[in-house]
Image 1 (tube, rainbow, N blue to C red):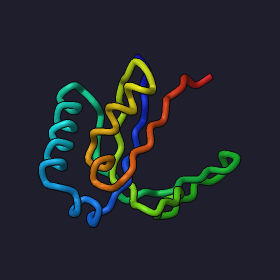
Image 2: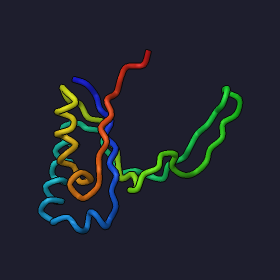
Image 3: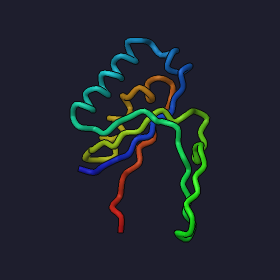
Image 4: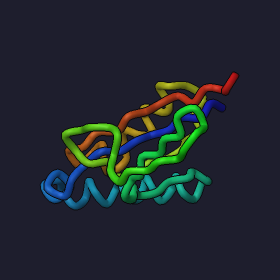
Length: 110
């Protein structure tokens, strides 16, 4: 099985305008994924880390990526194919509640 990182983006306004039954089904989907061992969590406050030329570590609060929607959470899932990973991600709260989920295939480091 291949591994994929999913990044969910969404905001409270989109969540609130989604039918409660749809949201509940998406949360139940996430609960099943967690029971199956998926490492999943909500996004906290990010910190940028730099260590150019391994000379000095500097940090700065705040995200590096830019998006119209805030990052809501992450998961590392396993799927046989990208299509299967997309199917899994398509039923999560961010995907159904007017947000978006990116699916990133993890590749082995050289």
